[in-house]
Length: 330
Image 1 (cartoon, helix red, strand yellow):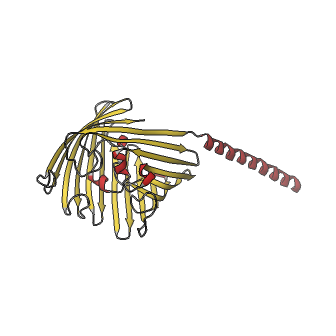
Image 2 (cartoon, helix red, strand yellow):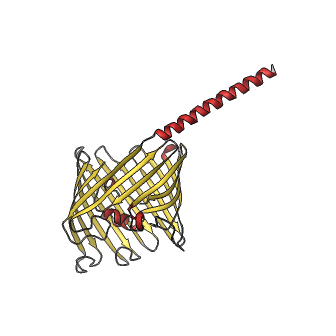
Image 3 (tube, helix red, strand yellow):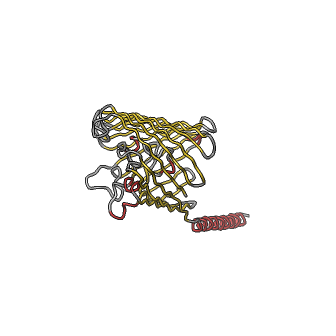
């Protein structure tokens, strides 16, 4: 009887090992067969004023070019990669910390899904701070905020993302100096980063932190669909001995093709990073998004009002401008 039990256990173990081998082989086959996907965008615009706010992108005179963005990605069950290349003025501004052939690399990273709830990423990826992003397809307004323009654009390092029950998530990371994409500069400090997120049915909120010796930035981003046609968002940030600000976003859809939105931002600079030290700017941007197929037309009126004469060669405290942009995503 004892011999029969041992034989039965041995046979069962062989069967389970065989099943496990088949499962692993099937997962590996799925990993290898997963196709590489390609996506990206093209954008161009017209600016009415030769002077632009001291913010990133959409700041050239007359008819001007944005960028070509080409993204290749492979999403396997256990691992994957993203290679994100940019060409043109917007792309050059986005990767200003890069040199040589790396000056067209917006993102370049590989990731490992350790489990269903944990992912480790190594490489260069766009920042987790802030409300706005580099790609014009993911921003409602074509021009960008002061907070986005003077926060970090990207990080090179390693991060671990965890998801939990109830919509909560956590990210912890270690990075090179901000916007140092290819390698860590000699003598530079490494940065730590963290993000605590909470997502619910109609929106979410993310509390972000970036820190190193003598520097700390805390950032809150949140947004939700109030109704099927109305969306509200908010971004608030504060960087030690540097800058702080808050922005509100309101968007209203009149149809599937047409949406209107407004961004209001207050930005204060204590370190003279974006504007003269201890000065501030309040800006209001009104944009429309008209979509036809993959193309979005964005007419935009922007008003900037400063606490000092920062515009028109230092003779005016206000600046108004009009931008008409075309953004094609694929």
